[in-house]
Image (cartoon, rainbow, N blue to C red; front, side):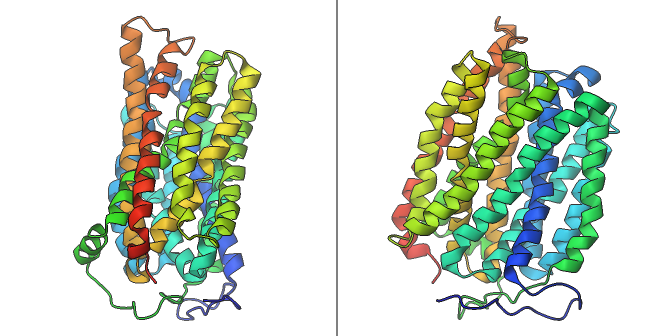
Length: 431
């Protein structure tokens, strides 16, 4: 279907807002910017938090992974249902206020349990971002433009990784980690009502016909899980997103293995990791937007290829002893891994009807949260502690390096699962 004009918007909510899909995409992307900023901020502050609160790598892994990931994934199912049945704009705006408040409260924590509660609050809030935003994008843009639209949304959002690392590192260096949490949290909280006023709720299913029948929650999940492509995607997405999960530990690794200061990690590490993911995400959308004109299955093939190519690059980053080379390798690895993010998410939209699209994304959030953002960071922390007990060095990053290398098995599995998904996609893609 050719796209010739902005899609119609509903008018039942508020008179404010601009009915232009590109403007809406920018607003959604800014919300995603705050999402990534608040998620990644913990990673650049990990070492000072650990020292200040007297915690172990295992405990920090729980805070960076399980505390965030479990709540992010489980509550994400509820958020997905709300995205299918309620105002997505309203849910998303309230959620932004919740996770921003929790981020600000992280700076007030004085114990492991208090920090655990704050990190869980961030997970609860950001669990609404993907289901609501991707469901909105699915109704803002036609199928042939969704990979690029999702890549723009993800790419601008992942700029938050760079901002979180760079600005967070500088705030930490000059004002301390507590102030960094407070500044980031209050900024997002101020934007929440602005987002609600600017966004408009689109008509569901504007680019698909004959798909308006509403289903119950359980029926929606059963319908989706019956599709082999969906099952492969739910197995593969956590592996694709492992690059996001391990970023929790990359600043700490640079500080230990390369004796980098918080400021250097924020500036050089933040630019390497952040710019790599941002440029890679945008490039992936552009590349697949061209390739899918030849074959729509490139949305599935590209994430598989990117996962495979990222493995030796991340391994080289962990193994090099030269700091300058490490930053270059980190940028290239992040670029390749990031190029898979947008197309991979577009695959989710392709195999789900508009009335259950939020549920599809919520299932993805659950799988990604449990593995990439939950188990993987915790595994790295506990494995590092275990290796320290066997004589591996902690201060020089030796134990952390070995743990990070072990996790590279996950993107290898991602390449396999997306390859398998492509074999049944032609049958399961919603026309």
